[in-house]
Amino acid sequence: MTAGGIGIFIVLAVILVLCYNAGIRRTSDNVLGGVCGGIARKLNTGANLVRCLAVLLAICTGGTSVLLYILLCIVLPKD
Image (cartoon, rainbow, N blue to C red; front, side, top):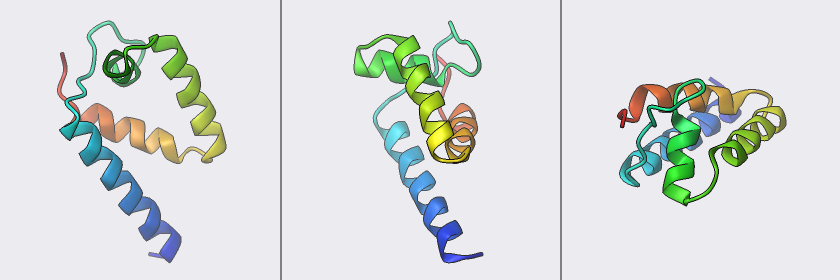
């Protein structure tokens, strides 16, 4: 594993732990996994705004944030 791969793994692990400890839960009124809805609820904002930001993040990170989304779907409890 390269240094870049290890760095990405560490960042993903930290984000997963922070989201779990913040009490973010996946919503039941979801489009894919309910992660963006749960983040929007925690931030008290619209889910569509968070979804748009997630798409932009996926484009900017070359798809790495898609892996984060999938991991959050697995780790975060459902509402």
